Image (cartoon, rainbow, N blue to C red; front, side):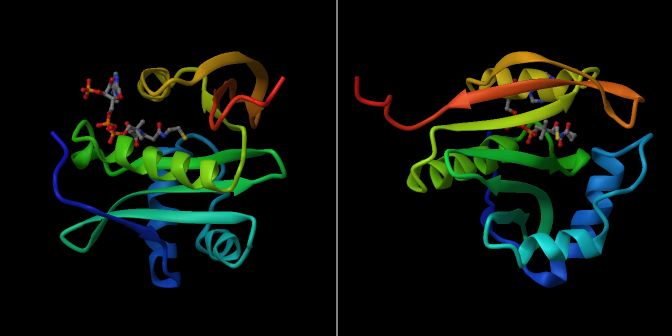
Length: 157
Ligand SMILES: CC(C)(COP(=O)(O)OP(=O)(O)OC[C@H]1O[C@@H](n2cnc3c(N)ncnc32)[C@H](O)[C@@H]1OP(=O)(O)O)[C@@H](O)C(=O)NCCC(=O)NCCS
């Protein structure tokens, strides 16, 4: 059951905690690319949303989504290990989907580590489909599975 939470755009003061969560929950075994500096740069980029979910004021999860002309791309997405399976990831994803729809975009795309069964289950559960494999996508350490979800109204015939 989903517990009380708040979803907002991130503040600069969140950047360090977001970078640490990225390193620990997403980039394990890879170089740490999403440093505090890079997260801060994303916050200043008009084509990028850094979004956080908080519980009792503390960072419970975050997502980074980039906006293209017709599609959005989720670059990073994580919930703190102790707070998973409580609906927070679903709430965060719903926020991103609504925002992308309001922006008039037609799809959300992402890549997940091929061995990340929980992420695949999570995205499949939310209507994403697998579109292919990107070999060696993660520094040649691991392949990525590419996924997409169509959103918004279907284009007129
Ligand atoms: C993937 C992730 C963001 C899901 O967040 P969450 O808050 O636990 O997700 P929810 O509680 O909203 O889960 C919704 C549904 O997704 C599926 N799901 C989520 N985690 C799952 C897991 N570990 N195994 C199988 N299915 C899972 C389930 O269907 C779940 O519904 P249920 O709990 O009623 O069975 C979280 O596990 C995470 O941060 N993982 C590490 C980082 C990561 O892999 N990020 C994604 C790739 S960048």
